[in-house]
Image (tube, rainbow, N blue to C red; front, side):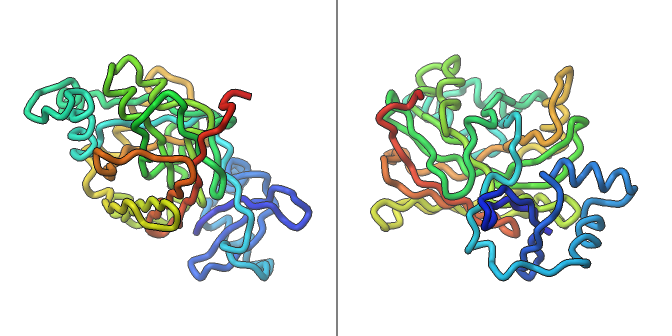
Length: 297
C-alpha cells in the first residue's frame, strides 16, 4: 500500500492510498502522521487501518499519473547518509584526490568505521515534490543527482515507510574540501522526495529495492544507472540508531540512505535537464533541473 498527497479539484491537498492495482482512494486524514496516530489509537497496524478505511469507500476515477502530486510528507527535517555504498566511496575518493584512486582518504575510513556519515540535508521549505524543479547552484561546475531510498521514521526511530529521494550534490565543492559539505549539499530546492510512501508493512524485503536513475537532455537519454539496496554497506536500523542518538527528531523525519548510482565523471547537470528516479514498488520521482536567475528570494 502506497500513500500519496495530491491537489484535488478544489486545489486542496489530499491524502490518499494507492492499492497494488493502482486504484486511488482519498483518505480523511491531513497527513501520514495523523493516519499513523489514529491507527495506534485503535491498536491496529497502519496497513490494516488503511485497508479498513478504503473498504468503505470508492476510488476516484483517476490514476496516479493523472494527479497533481505533492510531496508525500512535509518533513520538518530531511537527513542523509553518505558513503553507504562502495560506489559512493569510490566517487568521493575520485573527487577528493583529483582522480588518484590508489590514494587512501577519510572516505575509505568512514566506509569501514563503526560510525556512519550522517548529515543534515533539508527542511520542508527547501524540499520539493514530484514534477517540481530542483535547482543547481550558480557557483558549482560539477553537479549531479543522487538517487536514494528514503526512510520515513517517527520520533522514536521506528520505520513508517519508504520513499524516493534525490540528494542533489556538488561534486566539485565537496571534493575541494570536506568542510564544504553543507554548501555542497544544501541550498534552495536541493532535495526532492516522492512520489509516494510505501508503508513499511507492505515491504517484504527493504534490501531488495531496485533503483534506476535516468537523466534526459533535450529528450535524449544522457545517463542511466541501476542499483539495488542489497549493495548497501550498512543496514537501515544502524543508520537510524546513529541519527537518533542523543538527538531529537520529529515524527515524519526522512533519512536518505545513500547512493550507488553516480553519473560519469565528465557529466554535470545543466539547466533544462530532466531527472527520473525509479524505485521498485514505490514509483518514479521526476524533476526538471533549473538554474534560477535569482536563487535567493
